[in-house]
Image 1 (cartoon, rainbow, N blue to C red):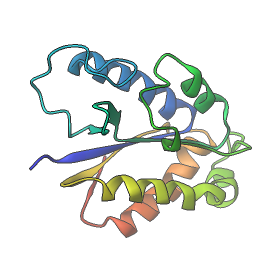
Image 2 (cartoon, rainbow, N blue to C red):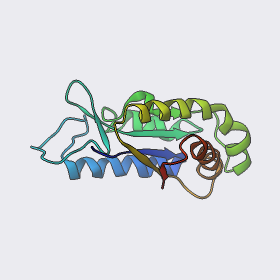
Image 3 (tube, helix red, strand yellow):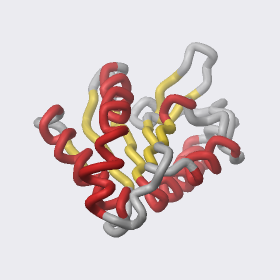
Length: 163
């Protein structure tokens, strides 16, 4: 049975790193910017990709930022067809480089939406292994919202890996 991982990309740094990582994963595994296989692929893609009914591969990932700029860049970039639109969650105002705003105020407003999307992703997995988190250690979203999200993940997914 395959072991699936879900990538969670948080804040400007996490989303930019995640976008570039998925580009590299695609090159490594022969998945094009539109999610279609561009070469005869013998490897199992199910650990990091989910397969849609049309034969398209969609990353098991969630992109989160409290302000929309970076997420909008991904939505309109070269790999816009690769990601599921519901997997990109953005707020209306950023945490202004402030941990407390990311953790206690602005971050709490979108936490339930993020957890709902993560829950749906985990339910679609046959052998869910854990989470890969991409974030910065500074800033409001990268540090504040990430710690808020990790508290919730640790509570709801106690026996799963969070890297």
